[in-house]
Length: 244
Image 1 (cartoon, rainbow, N blue to C red):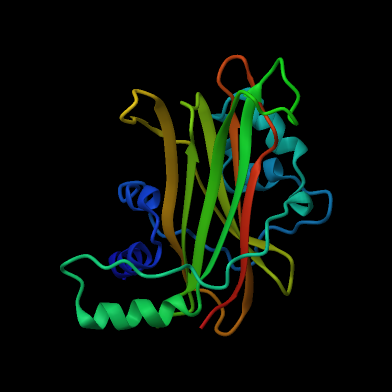
Image 2: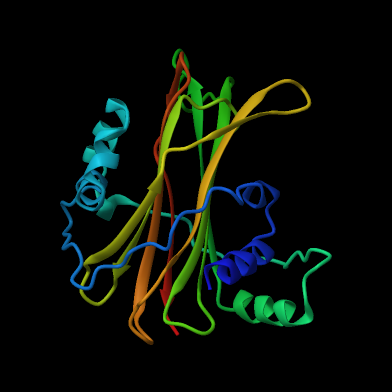
């Protein structure tokens, strides 16, 4: 089932960067029945530490501090695209897979945000020496199960010293958070001009959800800027979906 989900998402998400993250997947995200209660004062740090204490304390101190200061209720994202875009098929894609991907595309939501590293001697308004960072989330209800599939990718135009990407599932009815997944692994690549950039991401599934129930998927990316640079703000993405 997991392989089928990942294959459909890869077909749906027509972004070369994300397709290069095929190895950055993890086991199906565990969903708790009761969940973690949150209010307007709950931070991303508290949420992450609840679900993954060891992972939280392994992060650089700068990122821990930012997560502790960043309220879950503060996260905002641009109005999501209702559909992810045009499917891109590989040569070995079957007709059945094409039909499934097109059906799933109608239910998918894509959300993204952009921020910048900027020179510490400049103001954020100048951006004369700035580097783009982006976060992309694709989420969609599974076609045959009460589950939500997701793919989240992060990229930085500059080599990024450290970062964490976190994705969480919230029950819209109760407000409780049922699952949290993360990665702090980045891959550095060099483009044709010799400039190094960083990418990272997750591909996974929230399983065993309630049938016909409304959920909220939230993602955040926080980074440590390169030496001599500052970060404008964390990156957010999100989607509201109803399980099958």
